[in-house]
Image (cartoon, rainbow, N blue to C red; front, side):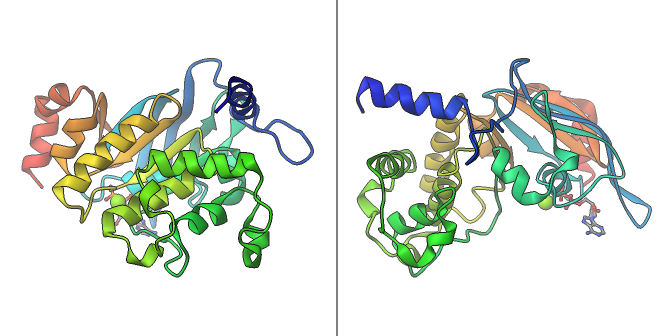
Length: 274
Ligand code: ADP
Ligand code: MG
């Protein structure tokens, strides 16, 4: 890419704007991209989240672990607007109140979520999947390849390279391996350029080689954006983690480096008791 194109691209990334030119990205001037404070979610009186307070920094790769039922998925549901908490606050940067927005608005503002099961369009090629995922192009579904600008092609190429599927661009997505489908789906999220990416159990069902490649991919995505990974595979978490947060019974039990949390007596007790 030329220096001018690179600059233009950067400018667009910095100023997320809607069709009217209004800016809608998060204000990250305080270096914190996500604020969850005192979040409580009850299901029939049972507290799936119990005064959960958690902060995610700009550009960090955070791993969230915790036994089954700890509230990890519920936490992601709150961030993405799928579940409304009973109380607490959730902010995306300084100015975006997530609790006043619905799911599409939150996605539009720059929070992408990868569910466990890949949901790629199996009948379409890898390239077409990325094309369909491009923001604003959902309405032109039947018009694949209609009018891709040079910039849009460049974006797709860049994402293909990031997810390591350059050599598979014309392959039908349904013919990819499980791991490749997961990477394609991460690529589809990247087409919308999220500032915060939430990933639920990315390496479940992957081969050791695919797991290793996924660790590299997620590590490479952090920095430019913030990535929150929920994962059970401890070997994987150890391989990517800088800061690990342990959830238990809907709140934070411990936070720190992998070594710190693994040596934490409270954490040991919770995992032994599982
Ligand atoms: P994790 O992802 O850490 O395994 P979850 O967030 O899925 O935990 O669940 C936390 C707790 O909340 C669990 O005890 C679960 O049974 C309960 N729970 C989650 N969703 C619902 C729901 N829609 N209705 C009732 N209980 C729920
Ligand atoms: Mg879960």
